[in-house]
Length: 100
Ligand code: SF4
Image (tube, rainbow, N blue to C red; front, side):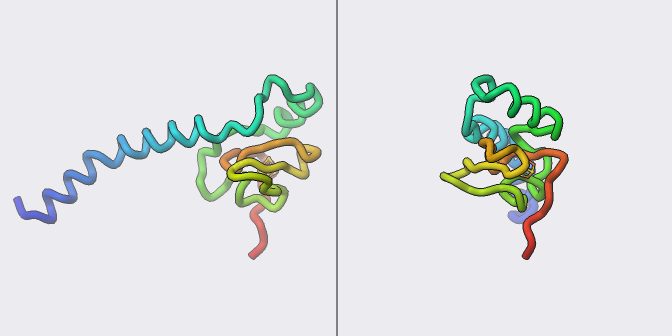
């Protein structure tokens, strides 16, 4: 087996584990608020918009949305959620890509 094929196989064998580990780290690092402590109106608004803490699509997430305003790190607020807290990794059904 040549070196490039061996390198490719080694990379292919480890990549899924790295992605899973990275996804788990992302999911645990994006908590900008305690959803249980949010006002009922905001929790209901999140539910009505289908909000999820971690988007399944890296190209469609709060951090890339026109309604997102970054505050600190991966944490920000959403105009459609009355300025309520969201993470840059989140997503809802009203996602609108930022212009430009
Ligand atoms: S509209 Fe949806 S996707 Fe956009 S920032 Fe608000 S919660 Fe995130």
